[in-house]
Amino acid sequence: GHELLGRVAKNSGCDHEAALNMEPEYIKAILEPIGMLNYPIVFLTDHQRPEILKRLRADKDIGPMIHLVPDEASWVGGDITLGIMANAFIGNPASTFSGFIAKSRLALGFEGNYLFRAKNASGEWEEVCEKRCVFWKRMLWNMA
Image 1 (cartoon, helix red, strand yellow):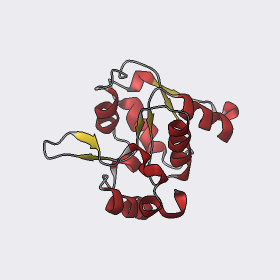
Image 2 (cartoon, rainbow, N blue to C red):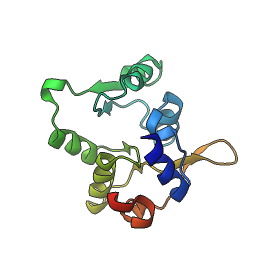
Image 3 (cartoon, one colour):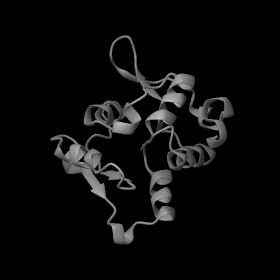
Image 4 (cartoon, rainbow, N blue to C red):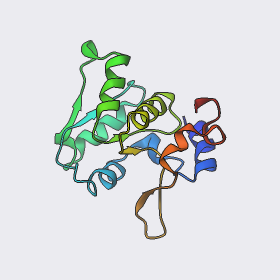
């Protein structure tokens, strides 16, 4: 994850850690400006980094909003559908899973993909890559 996101970050200008760590501050910086902070957050996971879910659930603002699809009800097609149909999708630009969801959302005309983010000079998170860059081979190599 770190090596691949580092390469994507070098090409796109996105932060080389934020999309891997999904810190509460990062999530809130996306959801608050779009008015989504008080709505359910469906957390899609492969369980490789359980500390992320634990950290998000411990946050006083977003913790109560976190919903996890039970393992017995989770399957890749359903998780992809949830991601595609979400009002906002926060993903990792180095993940083929996130990339597929982001591309599908764009193909369907949906806005609200948040993958390529970095802090600006004022310390605020912002998108650093045009929304169609998930399709750019020079950015994501064979994942595009």
